[in-house]
Image (cartoon, rainbow, N blue to C red; front, side, top):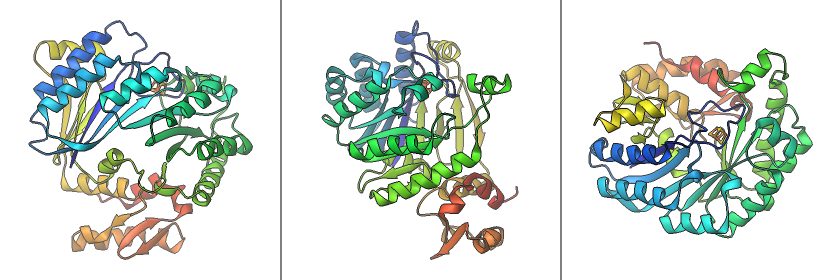
Length: 371
Ligand code: SF4
């Protein structure tokens, strides 16, 4: 089953750590949404006739869309793709955009899962991140959302300079008490070209403490396990029945079609990504073209992508899916991690232990096949 991702490239203000593509000028929002609708029509054959099991509005900030804009995008998808009646339709929202009116609009549009960017319940952390919402909005509006939606995921960030372990516990505890059934928790990363990167370079901010991040990740895994959440992917925890179907399909190498500036697509054999510039994207579509780059994937690249994503999941890397020579190579590459307790081998699956999860990306890179 395939998925559709729609990138809404607008935000009220730039969070200091963020390296996603977005503009804080909403001047050409109407025109951009019209271009998104047109891209859906132009690309209607991208996934063949594959049924669509998930639709995901990400960004940027999808909660800046009006009711009419949401309807026009979903209608265009319905008209041009075969969407399953029980498709998961997720929508990323920021706490300051949530109100009873908006929640009703989103429900009426058919959105059945909300992804709420909370990040922290402490004012000093939110200000440090340059988030657009306050701690009160985070708490009150998350609570309000639970009165309209059962299927909610919320994001939290750990490893930030002012986040002590006690504060981290409070953030996670609030989510558990509000009965949020899915949590995505990310270690703060410092990406080039972000304000945070610049501030650290100019010594206006201290460097990220990776030991503290590791400690907070270990604490998190412990709290979530005690509270009955399944740790089904490195950054994701779910109560039974609340895994993200959309993100799971990425990790299972399903096909997906990405719409909007900077969105990525995968059709089983190649990847392509739209230009990360609102004006260039819009102008190309106005002229009946698409502005994107494309890469055909070799078999080795496909296997390495599988290694990277599967190793992050609870199910692990299934060696039975590999040919004999590849399987042997992977077993050899994994041997030192098995002997040091970072990977366990169960039913021909390589699965990261909690300690191994601290080094997931490095271990995956070390298992990669050479082209
Ligand atoms: S709201 Fe989200 S997409 Fe926008 S700047 Fe902040 S983190 Fe990035």
